[in-house]
Image (cartoon, rainbow, N blue to C red; front, side, top):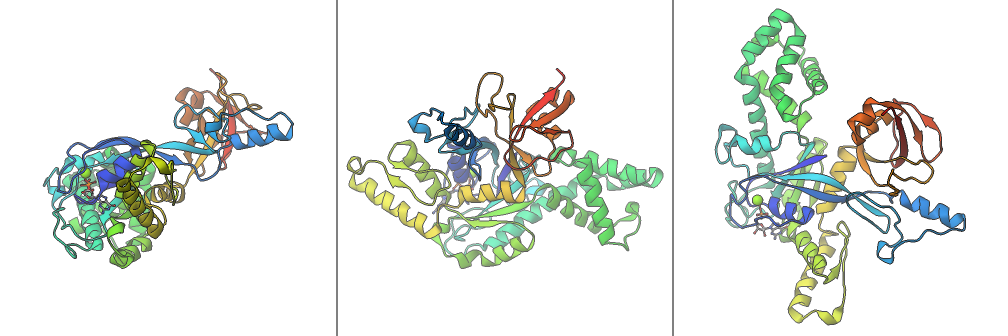
Length: 424
Ligand SMILES: Nc1nc2c(ncn2[C@@H]2O[C@H](COP(=O)(O)OP(=O)(O)O)[C@@H](O)[C@H]2O)c(=O)[nH]1
Ligand SMILES: [Mg+2]
């Protein structure tokens, strides 16, 4: 799972990245701070309680309660990566913070094609916009009303579409001529060759070409498509490859009506938009790390750990954060990422185990892995997600909750605990 943070310079992409990945990156109030893309891991809380809660309940019902460290707040699992406290299990999502996109990037302006290719293989993009509208399209601070968030979005979409169009048009006539000689499959092969570097699979290519031609029944044969038609097709590929959602950032500086028109546009295309304050999320994570507050990322509140230990200045700062969090109902940052992953990319969680009765792996770890898989994924897909060998050697699986045997094509449900039997 990989999500790209995109947008013009100076909107809060790096702040969002730093908050979500808890790593330090350069943040500054001028354009072009980020030169190389930052890549990191955001830990996202699952929507439902970790499956280890069931083990705890079962043991209790049987009169043999499980031991758990006080700091774990009941959790008994042993995650190989991430953590689980109070049954809130966190899973990794890769984030990419690319350099700000400036007008003309598809023609090589600014960092040009480099940052466009940083987006390759992202499952979705989150465009961070400056909802306060106080920076121009190039990211220069220029006072209120400098830029409309809708304009920011349309510019970004335009750059992405133009980028893909450039790739497709570069040798379209050659590819289409091959199709003239060899038929539709040659066209599919050509487009797939051109776009596979961006993460296009053959099935995406086939599907997108099919819907495009059936939506335009009057189109001539591909080898005589005018450039405009190829550009429209490129736009369809952009939508299929890079669905865009919006973080209306710096929401702490402004009112919701500033992004209302963008909201209508993005929602009409099935995208999500959330008001965010990356700066607030970053401050809360830092205060929490420093031991000043109790804050669980994604919560809409926090508490001061030890009132006696903070001075007047810190108290003032925390009061200001408290106000922001109340007005915005949280910082929006984790909520948006979570909605993108679970509601738009349709990820569910599955727990592969080796011991189906105790839910352990070979080394005695309890529910060691919580894997995000696509809704509709099968038992065999899960095997491949664990390891190629497990997928290749797949024999059957067991639903560890019911003990029932399930076949390769069995569709997984959210929170399934599964033992995979494979030839080794
Ligand atoms: N008020 C406010 N400022 C923010 C917020 N997020 C980022 N900023 C500020 O906006 C400026 C640009 O942030 P940065 O993350 O470097 O933007 P990038 O160029 O998009 O990566 C910095 O001065 C940040 O402190 C926010 O949510 N609210
Ligand atoms: Mg940056």
